[in-house]
Length: 337
Image (cartoon, rainbow, N blue to C red; front, side, top):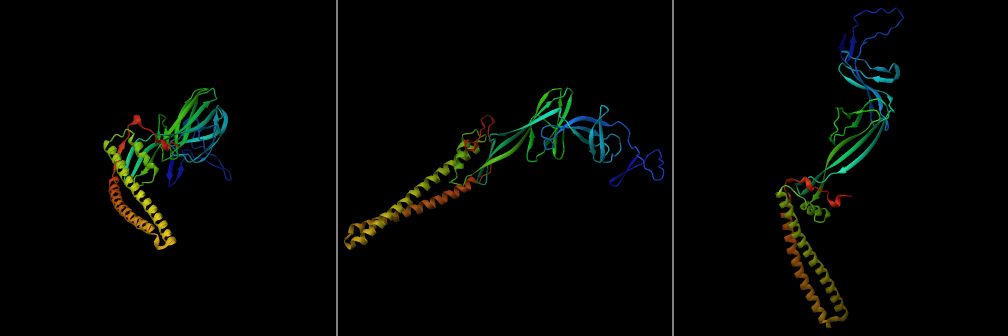
C-alpha cells in the first residue's frame, strides 16, 4: 500500500521479503494491466515530417509510479524505450518511444487579413478594427495498412483565439492537442485556424496626414450607427472649412512676399537713379500699403483658424462606436500593400 510522505511516496508490501546479506533484489510493486492507447504524436518542433510512435498511459493502479525508464513491447517484440516522470494515480502521460515513418505530415501556413468590421472614435482618433486569420494546415497521410490514431500538438499563443470547426480534445499549458483517426492509406487535412484582433488608426487632428482619406472611405461603407456617420460627415466638413482658410492665408502670405520683392526692386532703382526717380518712390509706398493690407488679412485669418481648430479639437474628442454591416465590409484600398 502506498503512503505519501511529504513529496515522496512510501510503498508497504503485503508479503515480507528476505534478502541475504551482501545481496540485492528487484521487488515488483505493480503487476497489473492499466489503461493505455497506442498513438502517433506529431509536434513540428520535434520533427518536421514524421510523428513519434507513442503510448498514452493513464495510471489506473491506485499507486504513484516513480520516474524511470520504460520498455515498450509491441506484438511481443521490442519497440523502443521511453522515460516516465513521476505519475500519480489517475494522471495521464504520453510516452514517445520511436519515430513513426508510417505517417507523413506536410505543414502549410496561410494568412488572411479580414475586412474592417467596427469603427471607433476616441480622443481625437478613429480606430478601424479588423481581424487577421492565421491558418496552419497539417496534411496527414497514412502510409500504413493499419488504422492510425494521430495526435497533433499545436502551440498555444495567448494573443490568438482559436476559431474554426476543428476543436482540440485537450489543452495543456503549451499546446492544443487535436485527435485524428486515420484509416489505412487515408489522407486528412487538419486545419487549425486562429484569429487576432488588429486596428488601424487615423489621427483626426493631423491636417497634413494622407490617412484622412480613410475617413472618406469609411463614409462609403455601410456604418450601422447613423450618429457615427453624422460625426464623420461633420469631421470632413469642418476640416474642409479650415483647409479653405489655410489656403487663403497661404495666398496672402505669397502676396506679401511678392510685394516685398517689388518694393525691394523699387528701392534699388531709387538708389541707382537718385531723388529724380519719383515713379519708383510711389511704387515703394503702394507696395507698403498692399503689404499692410495683406498682413491685416493674414492676422484675421490666423485668428479665425485658431478659433475653428479649437472648436474642431473639442468636436473630435468624442467617444463613439459602430459596427459595419457584414455584407459590405472591405479593406481600405491604400492599406492592401
